[in-house]
Structure formats: C-alpha cells, structure tokens
Length: 134
Image (cartoon, rainbow, N blue to C red; front, side, top):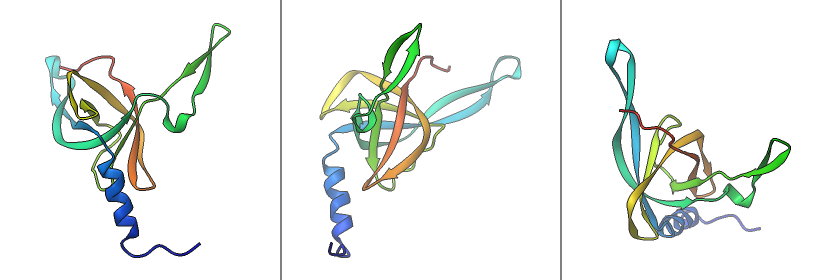
C-alpha cells in the first residue's frame, strides 16, 4: 500500500464533513445554586455544528440484554462530528435538522462516555434525555 500524500487526509476529512446532512447544537452544563442551596445543572448552547446522526446502532452492531428471560436488543444512537469539534462527555446535544430539514421538535440527547476519533470524524454515543433540568 502506498503512503498517503500530505493533503490526502485533509481531503478525506472535508469529504466526510460534506456528507454530514444534519445540524446540532452542542450544550455545555452550568452548575448554579438552586433551592436550599442545592446544585442545579442547566445547559447552555456552546455552538452549533454540522453532524451525522445515526438513530440506530453504531457500526450496525446491537447489544443484547436479558429482561425477564427475554432477549432485548439495545440500540445506541451515535453522532458524527467534524474533527476538531470540542465536545465533552458531560455535555448534551440537540439535533435541530435532519437531512437538511428543520425538525419541529428538536431531539435532545446526553453524551454517553468519552468522544472518540474514528477515522476522519469524532464519534459520540448518545442516550435520550429522560428528564430536563430547570
């Protein structure tokens, strides 16, 4: 196999980013004192980015868990972001556009685990937000 030319990886990253048809808002947690001086977490917009949202499982591999002796397939949605995007495990993501179309109800997700760089993109696993902080 021939070695990559100096700009080849940059071209691959640009192609990957151009293929991302979704838009998302990255949300950073902020902690403040609430009632009775208990910490309250709120999320503020930390910027928007193009992204590639995959509502099913990463790499097409589903995990199985057992629930009352029944196998249940668990899928994990994933999100691809351009290389260089700043995102952390404590953040949230709100998907605002799918395939170039604005969503009437944006989708909110927690980041699960640390973001990883896979090839020419950053990939994060997501979990649906089940409760909203004030």
